[in-house]
Image 1 (tube, rainbow, N blue to C red):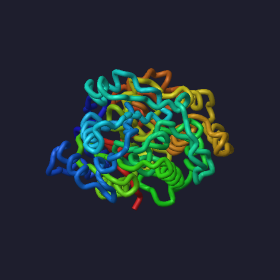
Image 2 (cartoon, rainbow, N blue to C red):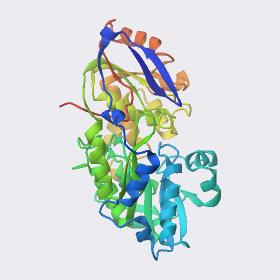
Image 3 (cartoon, rainbow, N blue to C red):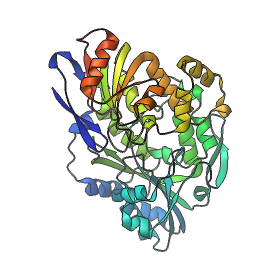
Amino acid sequence: MLFELPYGREKLRIELPDSRINGILVSKLHEYKPLKNAAELIEAAIRNPVSSPGLAELSKGKQNIVLIASDHTRPVPSRHIIPPMLREIRKGNPNANITILVATGSHRISTKAELVEKFGEAIVKNEKIIVHDCDNSEFSEIGILPSGGRCFINKKLTDAELIAAEGFIEPHFFAGFSGGRKSVMPGCASRSTVLANHCSEFIAHPKSRAGILAGNLIHEDMLWAAKKAKLAYILNVIIDQDKNVIHAVAGDAEKAHEAGCKFLSGYCKVKAVPSDIVISTNGGYPLDQNIYQAVKGMTAAEATVNEGGVIIMCAKSGDGHGGMDFFEQMANEPDIQKTLDIFLKRNREETVSDQWQTQIFIRVLQKAKVIYISDAPDEMVKALHMSPAHSMAEALEMADKMLKKSNAGITVIPDGVGVMVLDY
């Protein structure tokens, strides 16, 4: 059987013996064919806001307006979303002072080239764009999160008379879903606030999984921050495996997001097909730029791989590990259980950067070995407790040796960040 797996900006073509394939976990979302194109879907969402006045109406009489945008790590088609949002704001107030605030969370700062690729040259040239910096931006404290952590957000938000946000909704491996409230926190929060929210206690909670909002402590913190910051309006899209917009929601930050999550859940839940070998991806560019982000796609495989099995992860990772803290937490200690024990003993205020990603990565590694197909240096991959490979043939041969069998069953997940794998 031939597969074309997303790998960077290209496709990784692989052939697998039919006899070894136990199952293929694909979101039904990718079979969904909207009756409208991306522009029409976005316009329809703008014209039919959920539980909210339209953005033009909200903008009337508001002078200082902040439009939160996603950063370079997210495949949000911002160049198609931002212009109609700017149009609606200026329809409500032609003289509004608009700032596009790029929500980097605790990621690195977006480069100008990345901003141009994301927004287009016209917006970068003509609009006021500020890139959030979780360490060096000016912050305002807005209260105490339900988790008990102090909540600091970018002062541009507390100074604003109106806050709107764009984004996209996909399954999120510990926040339940991306999009909506995440634009404010972690998107525009201080590092200390992000750390408190991403503490080991919350990451270890059984409700901190893809597709779960009810009882998800991480989500509850994020929603509280968005409400306290007065995020008034969102325009979020849902995309298929080719990054095409197939659905859009707009309106109230909580209710519109819930509507988008409901739509998504109806298509991307898949039943686990346990196998000794599970092949997964991180959905290609931009989500597979580094190993840090690729942990997300591994969690889909984790949900269906047999205990002691092998995950073959395909992620181009041209940017390397993606975070020095993440890398050192894994590379500096050969005993991953010792690292996990240290994390679990820390209280919320003692959380360190990237600890959450490392914690989830360790959880994956404790269930299965990981073979990593990428462009990252072999020594880097080995330092992160994985086995490097550069082709599927090589990876399968390695997996067979690890399992000491040549006919182990295989489950394939072509888009590991696009499915919610459930055991039901």
